[in-house]
Image: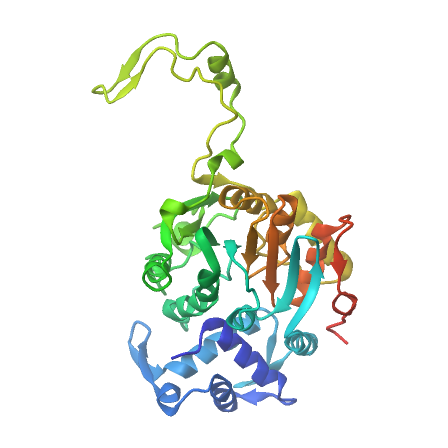
Length: 413
């Protein structure tokens, strides 16, 4: 089935938005199938679901999943058995979002933010110059396990590959991608973690010529979880990290440089270097680890970071954006990654004046980080509210131009 998770959400919300009266599920199935251009075989394909392996229509099953997810987000409300409609405020908001197809929201001397559908814009080769780095945090798949099932992981990977393919085509030799993905993704009804990250890695290598340089472990201050399998069933440990896939199209030509992100030495290390290094010869184990006199005596600018990245989600830039959202009466972005993490990755994986692209720009975290580090940047984001509050990251920058038509647009009018 060619309908991917984000496409399915769009089709379901469009179907409700186009109808002024509540839709029955039968009417919804037909409207969504038409929008996704499904043939008869795709509309009627059957599958086995649940522990009892009961046979149901696979397409109907996925539509009901999207329906329930939109209800949980406050976008849909049930008015009668089997009949749903958009909530009043969300109906206006969704109409407004769909009107912004591709609009320049803001620009600086180094970058630009565009309100658009990333897949649509990228497929038209709007970005026509070499890209040195793609950094992004796409929407996570299957974040909430549901009794009625989740879309297949393959659908999520297919969708993400559509975003990555045109960027990979423009990636300069030795360029990188850094993709933050969710870790608490489980097989439905099981403590077994999904292998979607591994599947994505293999497809990136086989289809896009992108090779794994590392999986960086980002440790944040995320809430303890997974609740079901760690707190209730006690089968899992608390998740302490989210993976960031670091991929490169030509590993031997990669221009990442850890000297751009060196960290301060500890006081102990500073004293050791100042004293000329280790004062005695030592061997450990079977002699594999030898430290001669003078080891660590060369004075260096800093220490090389590990591939475990510790950046709190609770950062001053994110708090300022949240405050801006409250002031403007906008829904805050609940899944921002910290700007300092973006600064680290951009500093490590790109050079001054390189072009950095984020296809899921959110509140323009990557753009602000690139601007600060003297990189050129492009952020693509579909949601007006997120870009609007993201302007706060550029407050005080004299060379920032904000499109007044975009900034003054009222999606609730």
